[in-house]
Length: 183
Image 1: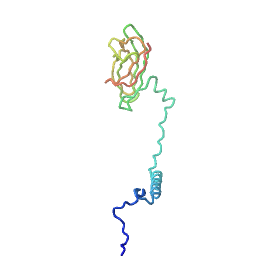
Image 2: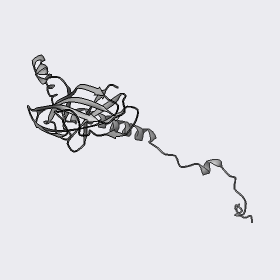
Image 3: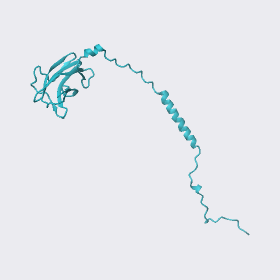
Image 4: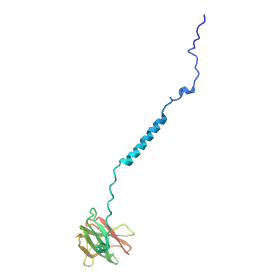
C-alpha cells in the first residue's frame, strides 16, 4: 500500500519578497480629496464669515492756514504721557564766550499744563551740561506754564564752544525736544 504524499515539515519553503511588503491600503486618493475639500471649506468660511471691518474714520482735519499762523513760531513739543499738554519753544539768540554760551529762549504753552527745563551737550561728546546761575536778566530756569502763557529769558551753559544741542526737558528732567546751537 502506498502512503499519501506528505510534505516534509523540515523542508524549506521558497521565500517570496512580496511577503515582506506592507499591506496595501485602499482609498489613498479619498483621503487627499477629503483634505482638499476641508481646506477649501476653511478658506471659504474665513472669507464669508469674518466680521465686516469698521468703516474707516475720517482723517483728522489738517490745520487751516489761519490756525497754523495762530500757532506761532517755534518747535512744537508735547508733554510725555499727555496729548493735551503741548506747546512750542525756540532759541531766539545765542552768544559764545570763553567758558560757554548764553542763550535767549522762549517757551509757549499752547494747551494744558507744561513744565520745562533745559540741558545741553556738545555734538562731539556725551557729557550733559546744565545751566548755571549768572545769565543776564531775565534769567530762565525751569518752571510750569498754563495754556496761553509763555516765558522768555536767558540761560548760561558752561559748554565747550562748537556745534551743540539744547534739550527741552520737563521740570523733572525728561527729554521732550531738541534744537541745535551753532558753534
